[in-house]
Image 1 (cartoon, rainbow, N blue to C red):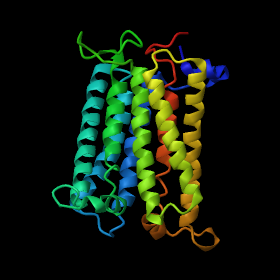
Image 2 (cartoon, rainbow, N blue to C red):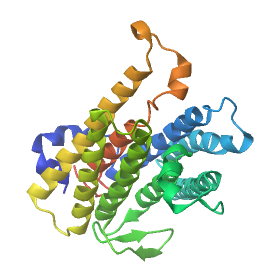
Image 3 (cartoon, helix red, strand yellow):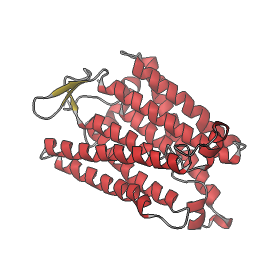
Image 4 (cartoon, rainbow, N blue to C red):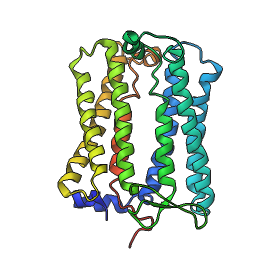
Length: 303
C-alpha cells in the first residue's frame, strides 16, 4: 500500500510510470546525490584558488561513486546480488569519506586538538570549513545501504541479505527512511543557519529555510515514531516535503540571482566565491527523498 496514493489518490498515474520500485528509485536518487556532492565540493574547494591533493578525494569519489552506482543499477536487471554487493561497497566508502571529511574539517578549524575556547566555538563553526558538509556523504551512504537490501516480509524490518541470511532491524524500512530524512533535514538546516550567520541573519529570506527546516525535522521524526500513521499524519508530512522542495528551488533561484552581475551576466568567479548556488537544493533533495519514502514498499509491483 502506497502512503502517497492514500494521501493523494490521483498520484497513482504518476507512480505507475516510475522506472522501478520504491527502493530502486531511492537508489537512483542516492546515485545522483553522490554526483552532485562531488560537483558541489569541487566549487567549495575551489574558493582558495588551488585544490590540494587531499581535497580532490571527495570530488573524485563523489563523481566516480555516482557513475558506479548508475552502472550497478543496470547490472541489477541481470544480477541483483552482484549489484547489491557493489552498491554496498560504494555506500560504505561514502560513509568513510564523509566521516573522515568531517574529522579533517574539525581539525582544520582547531576544534579537535586545537584548544579553541568554548566561547569562540560558534564563531569558528560559522567561518571554518563546514564540518557538516562531508557528513552528507555518510548520510547518503546510510540511505543507500538501507535501500539496497530487500525487506522480507514488507514492513517487518527484516532485511534479506546474501543467501538465506537475514538481519532484524528495530523499525520497518519505511520508518527508517523517515528517520533518515529527519536527520538529513536537521543537518541541512544547521548548515543553512551557519552559512547565513555570516551575514548575521539580517535578510528576512534566510529565516524561511530555518523555520521550515526545523518544522520538517520534527514532522519527519514524528512520523517515524508512529507505527500506523493516520491519513492526516501522512498529509501533513507530504505537504511538508513538498514545502522542502519549494524552499530548495526558491533558495537556488535567490542564490543564483545574488551571484549575477549587471544585466544578469554570469561571472564564474562569483559562483565560486559567492552564495553557494547548489546548497539550497539539498532541501529539495531531502524533500524528494521524503516523498519517495511514501511509495509502495513492495519489491515486486502488483499488476
